[in-house]
Amino acid sequence: MFNNRATWRIEVTFVETPPVRQLERASGVSEVTIDDQTIHCLVSGSFQPFIEALRGHEVICLSSVPALDSTHLERQQEDQ
Image (cartoon, rainbow, N blue to C red; front, side, top):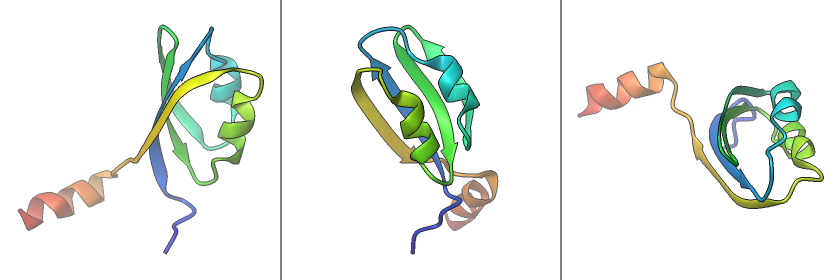
């Protein structure tokens, strides 16, 4: 089942200068860091505000993986 409050770790690479300010202001987006033309951030809940912040900026690579919270990590370590 989809958890609409899930948090995702995102990496986006742009052709030109990334829209850092737009992403920092987008609802659900946090921990924005930049490395040249690549942005790393967390997105919680809906991706819509994140996607809208990308409007008008050419993306050449985008990846997302679930961000594991500390409780989840502790359970994984207990299972090992």
